[in-house]
Length: 263
Image (cartoon, rainbow, N blue to C red):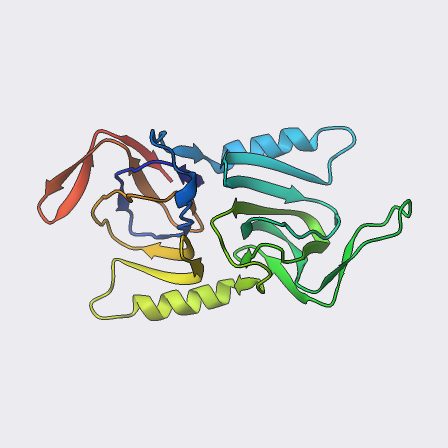
């Protein structure tokens, strides 16, 4: 399930005994308007239906996407690739990729080598850092940094969050593997008393941050005065409430009204 909130929303997580981890928060302060829209949900079923319909085209596309949302300075898609395309570097905008399924080699940095005109070849990368990526891997690619997916094993699917909030150009990619995520979350979750929420950071800047978040118990609802969040559910289940009115119940701020979704 993917979640995009472009509003000053009030939210509360009601957790089961299980847990979830989320890619959150990419704060897109510059993209917010005066009138905030409602939260946007995309279930895994909806995403698969969209990607499946696009895969039935003739000829079958090498890359297809299911849109989650977009604005002047951000774009959120689920992308599926089946074959290597040319290496690229975006002049403006950072990207966070969270791998959902499949495996491939991601090359970042180095120099883009463009093929001769009419050769039928694609642009590649000379030098750079090569990593084998699969489900659970997360990478942040800064602006003007070459990147290239190649060596696919079947269909390769990932969440793509592209945003322009002034991140430094040309920096190296930042990687977070499932094993590193597990290590950090285990260490932080073993504190006494056990925290209700703890994170494994991916990267951050003046106006944005990306973390893997683990929650084990409800906390109070509350709004962010500025910023958009994208939540990509990695594991576990909970009820997510957005909108409505925040009220005090005992030691917690909770939401009355609003929209509840099981995620």
